[in-house]
Structure formats: C-alpha cells, structure tokens
Image 1 (cartoon, rainbow, N blue to C red):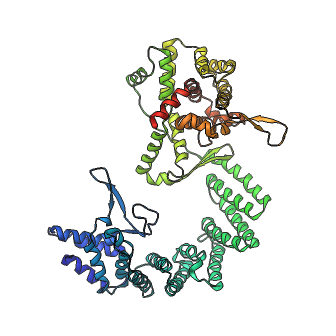
Image 2: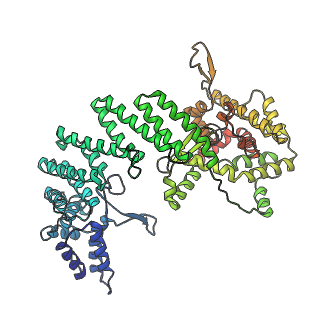
Image 3: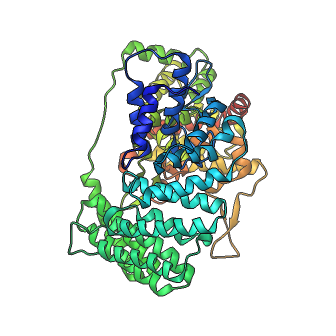
Amino acid sequence: MAVPAEIETVIQALDQGGPISAHDVESALTKARAGPGDLGEEAHNSTWAEIAAWSLTVDAWNSDPWRCYFGPIGQGTNPDGSVAYLPDVTALTSAVVDEWIARLGTLQHPVLKARYADLCWEVARLIDGRKRSFHHALTAISAYLEAVETGLTADFYHQMEQVLRAFDLALSIRNKELVVRARDTLLGLHDRGVAGEGLWWKSFDRLIGERNANLTDDHRTRLVQSLEVLAEKYANQADPQVFSAFQLDDITRRLVIYYRKQGNRKNVQRLSESLGRTFEYAASLGNAMQSSSSLQSAENAYLDAGLADDAKRARIGRAAAIRQSQEEMQEFSFSRTITFDDMDAFTAGLVVDQPVTTFVRIADHFLWRTAELEKMVKDLAEHAPVMSMISMQIMTGDHVAAHIGGVEDDLDGRVCHQAVQDVQYRAIFLQEALSRAVERHNLNPHHFATWAGRTDLFDDLTFVLEGVGAWFASDYVKAIFVLTPQIETALRKLTGNLGEAVTRKHPTMQDREVAIGMGEILGNANVKEALGADLLLFFKVLFSDPRGLNLRNSVAHGLLDRGLVNSVVGDRLIHTLLVLGLWSDIALYRNKKDG
C-alpha cells in the first residue's frame, strides 16, 4: 500500500518524538491530510486507512457492530438506508493489514507499536478473515506496558487505558509473566490515582475481583486500605473543599461488597453508618429538594447498618424536606394558539352524524398507540441526549411516589411520563370533542352509561349513571370519586370473564378473601394478552402506575391531589367509559394491525 509522503512524514516524526496519545496521532494525520492538493484514489484510500486506524474508539466490547475492543466513533445512514459506521474497518483491505504488520518491524515508539499490533490481533480477522497471531498480542502487551513505564504515553487517563488493555490481553492469552507485569504496573497507577490523579475505581474494580491476577493478601490489603483512606478523606466534614457524600458513596459501595464477601459484618456496619452520617450532614447544606435526596440515601445507609432509629429519623426529615421542596418548585409553561377553524376541522373528523360512530372515533382517537409513544420518546432523546439520561422523581405529599430513569434504562417509565404529558396537552381537544358530541346528539348520562355497559362489564349501572351525571353537572369531585372505583369494578369483571380468579386470600386473615385490585388485574398475564399493549398502557397510566396519574390508588387511599380534581381528569374518565364499551373491538383491531 503506497502511503502519501506527507502522511508517512507525520508517522516518522511521531515515532521519534515524546509522549503521545491515540488522539494526538489522529489529529496530526488529519491535519496532514487537510493540506493543499488533490490526492489520487489510491493515495486517498491509503490516507483514509491510516486515519481510520487511530480514530476508532476503544473498550467497545458491548457495542455494535463488531463487539470487540475497537469500535466506530459514530454511525450514519447510507443512501440505501443501511447503517454506515464511522470508520468502518470492514471496508479496509488486506493490503492495509499488511501495512500494519510491516510497521511493527520498523517503528520504535511503543504507543504506535501497541496500536498497530492490537489492530492486527483484534481487527485483522474482521477485514480478511486471517487467523490471529500470538506474536501480535505479545507485541501489543509489551508495547502498552513499555509506553506507560517509560512515560511515553501522554497522560494519566491514557496510561490507565493502556495498562488495563495490556492486563486483559495478557489474561486472554494466559501469559502469567505478562499478567504479573501488567498487574504490578496497574497497582502503581492505582496508587497514583488514590493520591490525586483519579480513576482509582478503574484499577480497583479490575483487580479486586480478578481470580487470575495472582493477587497476594498484601495486594488486596493495599487496595482495600487505599479506599479506606479515601473514605476517611471524603467523610471529613471539617474540610468543605474535600467533603463529598457522593464520592464516599462510591467508595463505600465497593468496600461493602468486598467486606460482605469476607463475612466482615462489623466493617459493613461501620462504613454504612459513616455513609449515613455523611449524607445526613450533606442534607443540611443544600435546598429542600437536594436534602430529600440526601436523606433518602442516609436512610438506606442506616438500614444497611442495622440502625433502625437513625433510619426513622432520616425518613421523617426526608418527608419534611419533600413538603418544603414543593414550595420551592417553579412552574414552567408554554402557550399554543388554536384557532376556531382549527378546532372545527379537528372535531369534524370525530363528531359525525351517527352517535355510535362518534363514540367509536372519540374512544379510538384519544387512546395512545404504545409504539408511537416509544418512537416519540426515542426521537426526543436524539434531540436532547443529556435530558434523556437524567432521571426524574414524582413526589406526592411527603414522599417520592415513583422514580423514572433515563430513556435507555427505563423506556417504559419514560413512555408513561410522555402519556401523562399528552393527557394535559390534548385535554382541550378531548373536552371540545365531548362537548360537541353532547350538543350535536343531545346526549345525556344514560347514553354514556348504556354504551359502557354494552360489553358486559357492569352488573349494575346505578353508580355509573351517578358519576356521569356529576360530570354533566361539572361536579368533578363526585364524578372522579364515583367513576374511578366503577372502572376498577369493570376491569375486575373483565378478568372474571376471562376465567381468572377475582379474589385472593386475605394477607392476615386466612379464613377471608378480598377482591383483587387494579394492579393485580393489569398484571394478570391473560388480561394483558386480551387487552394488548395500547389498552394496557392506557389503563396503567390513568389508574394504577405511580409514574402516571395513578387515579385508582389516589382515590382509594385518600391521596388525590386537589389539583387533579378538574375537568381534565373528569373528561378522561368519560373517555374511559367509551373505551370500555368498545374494548374488545379495539383490542382485536389494534392487535391485528400491530401483528
């Protein structure tokens, strides 16, 4: 492979130079490529191959597409719709691999040798299917370690990265001599990390649990005591510049795991108590919302330490902080202008000549499609990646009702949250659709109650009529507190109609039975299958999931916030009755369409 002179000049200069990192090499090669002049096709391809070798990300074992140590830094889409990886090593040729091998015989700088040798070991097989050579693995390990030991790796971060790679490579080829050498170098980096350069967790985590690292008792003691020193440092309340409950939490978690494996309950209790005291002190330094989070961590730590009274104190303090935090919260809102023409056009598609068709269209239109919500959440994550990773807490009264994680870890929770936002966003449209339906067809409570009862889910419609009548009268307190339990009754009847039990043993009185609740109903496998994904999400978000409106539990336990007693919730309950009168048809249609 013919390498352009300007690229070769850069590589030779780096080979004779001082400390470098992979990023330094990539930057130098890219800068040389950006010079004046139009390269021919062969020169262009060889230049791209050289840059690709240094622009790969590392430690990409769990990432597509190659699931090896090296991975692309990004991806895009080809004109035909297929995925394009940047860079894509599978587009390289055997001549490129031959060039890497040739460089191993001429280059002296260990950073350069390590990368080319590792590429031959890890990536060459992806390019032309050639067998791995242990010589390349041995060369890579030795070069990585030499680069760190001689100070020719640019910075501490890359030194840690290279030694960890050397350690893993040595373990993979079972070379005990190189394993020991890499282990000792890693221990040295660990000491530097603890002393202030950071990344101590990388070395600790990799060594402490590795059975084949040939760790001695002295090595383990050295690792553990180094973290004990850090724990004491970060727990020092007298030094506000260093004090950190979160750093202590990271350290304590690792030490507790180690001590538990050793059966050392005393040290587990000691560290957990110290963590609890630290978080409790941290709670006194921040605002109410920060305090509530810190006191939750304090409570958990005290429970781990077996200190029930301390845990109770932290819990009581946390409840007070949550109440106070609600006063500190700020309201964020946005406005949207909807013209009369827009609303007329919207309702025209729902409120039609036939009342039955009107009911069907309103029921279906305001029922979420799970796949669409999931896509919406994922699309939002692409446009706001940082926000998509931030977790959320839903607070009710004096406690945290639910936790919603990031999009990648908790897609279901994010979908529930998006559905709740949709309830608010589309409230005016549902209100107008119901209002115009009532006006156009001269509807009364009997129409809605009779519709809800058409699928044999109500043995008695008396309370349904009372609830709908309250909605007609704008008495939302009565409507919500009457209709919510009736909807639960309907779902319990649905469960029974499927041949499932609708009662269970009383938890404390073995000679008694109690009716199953909404959570058990929607958790039943046959019910979930009968409803399908869309209806299941609908009922969960509105009635049983703490990440949603959770109406059933809020009504049943007297926890309904005054702010939820309004037309928005009342309209959704009326919409739910329309859905119940059509549920089997909706489930059949949507499940068939999705399938």
